[in-house]
Picture: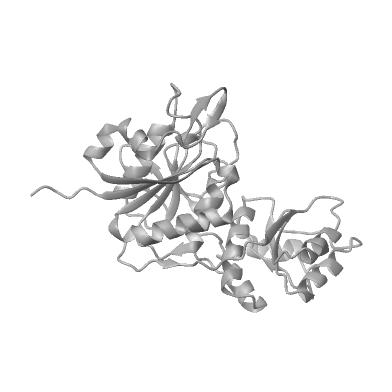
Length: 340
């Protein structure tokens, strides 16, 4: 009796990986997923693959509503597959995969995102190698997380961000982000969630009125009150170093208290994403500067991750104590609170 081939669902959303060049511009979605598979016929000898294209767009045009549509699509189909692969553009892949990490939990099987720098019609393209590796990881690894497979790396969704606009290996690699390598075989490293029988949980209630404010010398704290008055329901503040803010003589304290009064949670992240022992060193570095101020520190969580996570959290609760507890709880490997 022949061994059953792993079943894979391949979902296209657009991006360069699906694009053809026309008059020196990319036309996204011109390569459907079934078209790309025909270019790597050897992969279908090992896997049973179904394809669907739900968007044909530049990932820069994606909105949270698109991520929710993607989450619903995966939720209603994942039980029939051993793994899911999503092709997307590089620009916002780290937002979309993070959204799926929070919007769709307890999947028990891998959801793998991949992208490319060059289209399949280019001579030295990375489309086919990245797609092939993504399918292999989705079908044959023991992983049960949402991850990016790209340029021979397996990267945790909630810990990955793009740092290079024009070269291969364009995603920042840290000990928290890389959970595996693709060599002759799949080599998993560190801690990761493993496959199991489970009942996926879909969270369809999200709050999209979230803003990110990057702090810089001379930042006008009135921008916070303006955001609140314009209906923003949560604000991610990207501070300095361990998450410091210019509190003295800037009107910042008053702006924070105004947001508190209006029940708009302020989430504090850092412009840095490298370093150890954030929780311990934060106390030493910042001391009591935030005493008597209601602000939620997320330590080493990426700003982009905090932005998406806050959408999910505020979709579940608006109670400040619960928002704080959930933002500082590790659900998908997004935050490290381990003590030294």
